[in-house]
Amino acid sequence: MRAADAATYFRTLLGIATAYLVIAKISPIVIAILIAVTILLDAVDGYLAVWESSRGKVSFASYLRASMGNAKAMAVVHSFKSKSHKAASYGPRIDVAGDRVVEYVFWALFTYLRVIPLFVLVLIIVRHSFADAFMASRGTSSKMKTRFAKFIYSSNIGRGGINVVKFATFSYLAFMYIWHSPAWIGYVLVTILVSYIMLRGIAEVYDSLAE
Image (cartoon, rainbow, N blue to C red):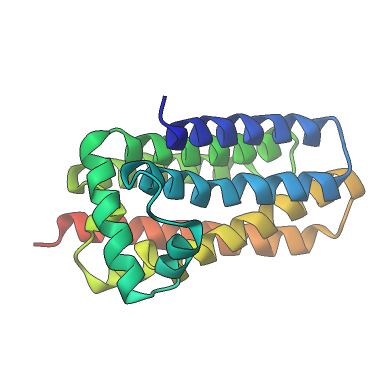
């Protein structure tokens, strides 16, 4: 098994385990830390894919420089990332599957706990189902062509922004359920996150239909 895939499976299981800890009403601080680790592991499996294809020639520091827009580092990382995709074409799809499972688990969890309404979960499922189908026809996010899609979906700002909002939203919903924190803050965060997810979905569909 590739190390990158192992990292994806691990973060998927960690996300599921964290959801059970919410039900068990473990300290929301601990839960927030675990959510942060789960999100950060998404970057780790990306690095491991590059590290394996380069046979250890690409350091994590170089990978971080590439993620921050360093042109020289990006050229090196992307060349090995392309090599990794050719060696294991399923890798990027496994990565997306891990993302979706973790996200669905948290949306379903807070719907089950009646922290958020059911229509939010339904909206997310519909969005991901259709947007992912369009994206699969294109390939991966690295193959996006339009400026709009690249900025909203595949840029460092787009990727980093969605992860920060996910962390803030899911962590706060845990605080709402366990410590009864003010609900309005949670609803504002859910609105921002859902809007962000829908915008990224529009970017996926738009890029896939663009000539």
